[in-house]
Image 1 (spheres, rainbow, N blue to C red):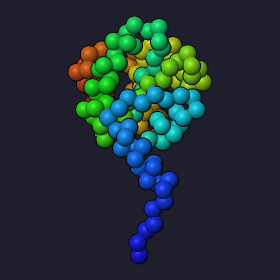
Image 2 (image 1 turned 90 degrees about the vertical axis):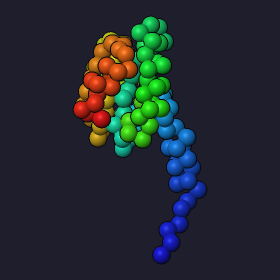
Image 3 (image 1 turned 180 degrees about the horizontal axis):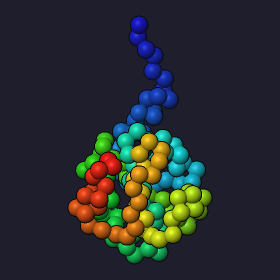
Image 4 (image 1 turned 90 degrees about the horizontal axis):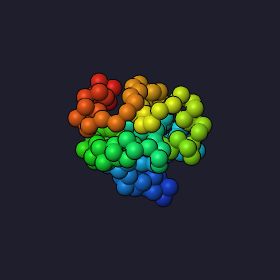
Length: 126
């Protein structure tokens, strides 16, 4: 028996494909859906516009998002615009990087670092 696919399902699938390999911006409103409910692990950078080390980390995260597409999602959350999620996870310093798997934080790192070191530090939880 053939399964019918709705237009909404097609749109959802297209969104997943379109955003694969990109750094996603998440907010308090969509954090649960985009991060906690995500199937692959998600690396979230808690960042701020005024944070110099965060700006230095942006190209590293973009490379990781492209190279690890399908295996790891990468997202950023602006702490100033999203205080609820920031407080929930006790983020006090920027950049804070957290890996979420199965809806739970499984690794937390503070500070910018080179791509190679970052990948080594999260390898066992991805």
